[in-house]
Structure formats: structure tokens, C-alpha cells
Length: 139
Ligand code: ADP
Ligand code: MG
Figure 1 (tube, rainbow, N blue to C red):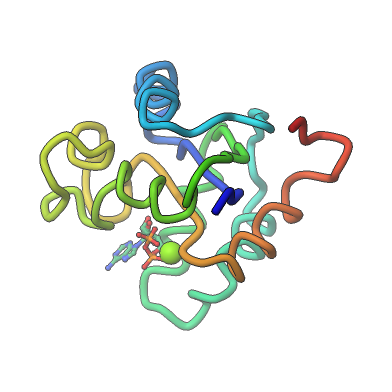
Figure 2 (figure 1 turned 180 degrees about the vertical axis):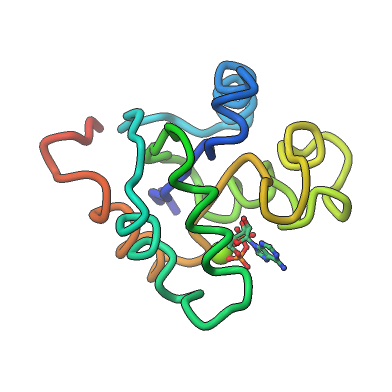
């Protein structure tokens, strides 16, 4: 099933200069970039994006991190793109992530874990339009 998912290269990975390497991973992993932009989120935008986590103890720290510098938001397409991108990313905590995953290789800790990916079609349908309108998506 051809799917679309929202990916983010988080501020830690952009700052570390890992953007190119991460794009290489996802392209060689069978995903196609159909939308991409660099954006420095405000605190409010980060809070809105992560509103499902608003009652978690890490919410303020997470949204502070996500707005501390520019990130790259992208729409990825491909066969089973949602699960494929989650597999390429690895587990939330880089210490638990499998060998060869992006979070294992580029993440620093459970918060500063280099990348985001939608966790379901329902999430993708909310997250993609949070950052992109139809005119910004090719393919
Ligand atoms: P995922 O990004 O793998 O879908 P979650 O949706 O559970 O993970 O969490 C969203 C983001 O919140 C994570 O990617 C990570 O940056 C941060 N996070 C998750 N759990 C923790 C935690 N226990 N402490 C600090 N930050 C966390
Ligand atoms: Mg999640």
C-alpha cells in the first residue's frame, strides 16, 4: 500500500550536521521525499504538534528542545511508508534502538533522538497538514 508519512529531522540532528546522512538513509531505505522544508518552530507550534503528549512529564522539555533550533519537516512516500520509516528510525530511546537504525546512530538520548515519524495513518493525516498544504507536495 502506497502511503505518506510525516518525518522530522529534529534540531539535535540538524545542528550536528546529520541531515544529509539521514536523507541518504531514508532514500536508500525505499522512501521518496515529496515535501521538505526547514523551519524553526516556535514553542507554541511545538506544543501544538505534540499536544497528544501534553500531560506527560517530559512535555515542556520536549517542546523546548523542538523549538531550540531549526528542524527539517518532510513528507515521505512509499510502500508501507509509515512502518518503513519507523523501522528505519528505530526505537524511541536510542539506547534501545537496533543496529543500523537512525536513532541508534544519530540520537543522543530518549528526548534528543534525531528524528520523528508518524505512528499511524490517523496521525499522518493530522501531522502532514500541520506543516504542508497540498501545493507544497509533489507526487
Ligand atoms: P516516538 O517519537 O518514538 O513516536 P513518543 O511519541 O512516545 O515516541 O514520544 C514523542 C517524543 O517525545 C520522542 O520522540 C522523544 O523525543 C520524546 N520522549 C518520549 N519519551 C520521553 C521520555 N521518557 N523522556 C523525554 N523525552 C521523551
Ligand atoms: Mg510518537
